[in-house]
Image 1 (tube, rainbow, N blue to C red):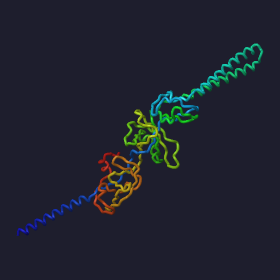
Image 2 (cartoon, rainbow, N blue to C red):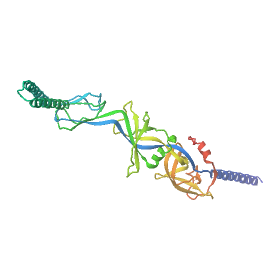
Image 3 (cartoon, rainbow, N blue to C red):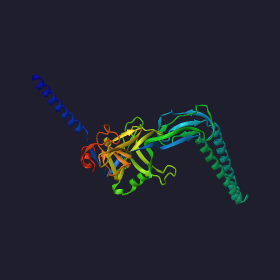
Image 4 (tube, rainbow, N blue to C red):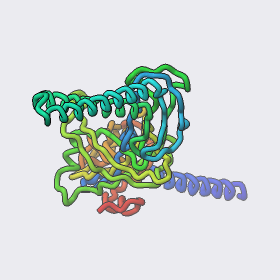
Length: 359
């Protein structure tokens, strides 16, 4: 009798256990499903940028000769008008002395001719010729002074000296590169924007996103100063279909240098954008997919293309419509053509539980 009772108890426990496991299984197999949502929004788009100084020029020799002095060092900050290099001036000093002597001689000749002309010994035409010789001599002096001034190379503006390839004593030709000078007080960031994004940026000016942008440096850190988009080029590149934007960044700490690269982060406005939660996606070989649920509860994978990223959300450019039902959670638990039970959640309810509250 005790054996029968024990067997019955065991059977009852087994039944309860199996029922509990079955209920748990049914609860696990219920998945949350939602729809993509279409809204007007803005998102942060990153663009590869080239950083340039507001002024960056090559310093070249304007006369030939031997490099006599170098007054600065590579990487040094210099003031406007500061002496940088000196080319041996002896030849040009001699030219100036010769021109000054010829000027003095022509002035004496003019003085004598004027005295003779006043006494009608020579004609006034000879006096005019002598006057012209004086003017020509003065021009030669001015030219000699100019050539001599070219032997001293000065900074045309305040900036930072680049590499100096030549050393003292080097023989330099006219036009030879001595160094480069960069004004890094402010910096330009150039980046290319696609035609659709350009049109979205320019359309409806009053609704346009802020022109202020951020700059992410090569080490992943965000530059502390914000830049402002101030120039858009006049033509699209026929090969790429892009147009160049230019932003200006303050560079108070002189951290940015000419030739650096980075990524500009710009707020781009979007009309009728289709967005989905990031957690509804999965990746295979750098491609993004979602599971679409049909009316019978059968899931099938679908590749999507994203055009931007928001906190917790992707902006979809192709692959989905706002009428599709997508698997919200459990994308790692289902397989292609699985039939599932699901609970539908309204898109707005889903968005309200994310970090970003879409408006």
